[in-house]
Each structure stands twice: as structure tokens, then as C-alpha cells.
Length: 95
Image (tube, rainbow, N blue to C red; front, side, top):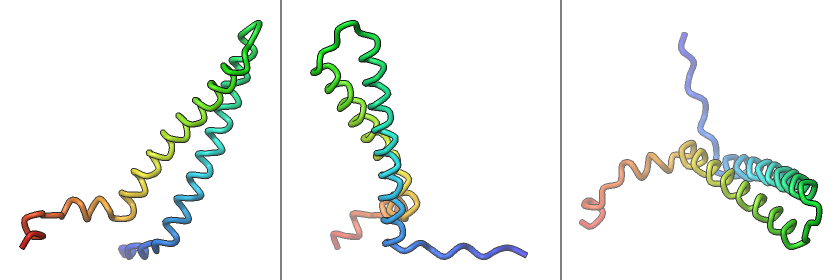
């Protein structure tokens, strides 16, 4: 016997799930930044504080941005926003 489709998620539940996923991405980005700072500081005999700060901030922001954009793509697809855009006809909106 076929199973019925699961009930659609509410907007609040989807938003809460997205925020939780972004917080995991932020935690991962922080771990990547710390690892990058450790690797850079151990590879240099003399390290400068500006280089360490730039490495940490750059790795954190890059990882956070990449992960967040990926999550937004999945959120857009699962929430039905892609379906709305696919069926948009500007000719019908003008009339």
C-alpha cells in the first residue's frame, strides 16, 4: 500500500531548521579558522599578528559564506520558492 505524502513543513519550522543549520555551519567555520591559524602560526618562524588575524577572519568568512549560500539553495528548493519562480509569467501580471 502506498504511503501518503508527509505533511508540508510550516514556515516557522523551516526557518528554525535553517537557523540551526547555519549555526552548525558557523561552528564549522570557526573550527576551520582556528585550524588555519594554528597551521600558519606553526609554519612560520616569526609570525605577525596582522597575518594571523587576516588568516583567521578570511577563513571564517569564506567558509561561512560558502556554507550559508549552499544552505540557502537547499532551503529555497525545499520551501517551494523555486516552484513559484518556475511558474511565473510576467505577461499575465501586467494585465
